[in-house]
Image 1 (spheres, rainbow, N blue to C red):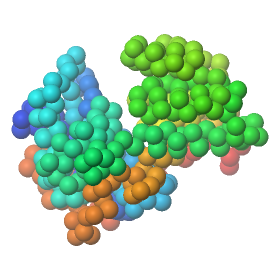
Image 2 (image 1 turned 120 degrees about the vertical axis):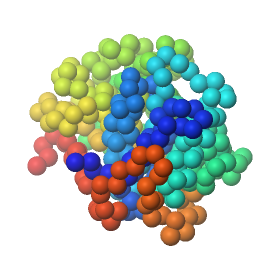
Image 3 (image 1 turned 90 degrees about the horizontal axis):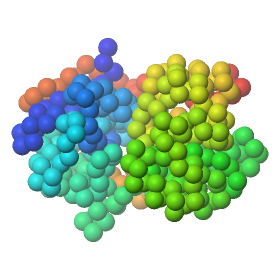
Length: 339
């Protein structure tokens, strides 16, 4: 059974690409979550991603004690094709149309493949957008806040493992050097951590060289002999196979939906590996000031009557759950020795 309040699936009027918006829960407040532009083999893979990511956002806001629910927007890009400037603008305007049709039930922000500048384009159509550029009255890129929140989680785990929150000399593998991962790697280098890094983009090795880090291929890094592995890219990185190969003592990172399947958490537990749930480690972007979430300009200005779930949009919308249903708990944190 689908555990979501609304799922809208549209074919963009301009781009003719699949635009998916999943609203998991509005029990704690209007839903929020980033817009992901990514290549998928099939549009249904994008739908699966949107469903999982929106549920993760519900947990992230709830754990942080914020008055928001979980949502996510995904645009399924054709394999092997990149968006030109005009085509990209068409895609963003299509996304804005779908968000506007939800009448305030969901607001979006940057995620994989999108930026504050993209939010400015969406903001031309709908006010339900956050993290627009500072010069346009927004709060800009939240990636540094997310990196700082993950750094705090890493310090807490270091204190549990070694009795100190100092990360100097701690060997850490950072998997992914996007905006959050690169920012976190720089913070860790400043702390004196011994870094191993990777990214799907080989050009990101320049960042590793700048930080004096060891570069490993994406296929090798999870098995690196380090203290802590930090997933900071796409989800489902922890499978039964990769979890069995881990040589670290903890996994702590901001990447969403790190577990490919829930039973991977049990495998980590049996191996005495600490796993900090992604919705805890990565909540810094949502819980930082000046607003709640950190850069949700639209959420802090919306009247209460605008926050109710919308009626069915024109293309496809599923509404199988009550808008007043409480958000469900996700996979529990696995701490060695926990009951």
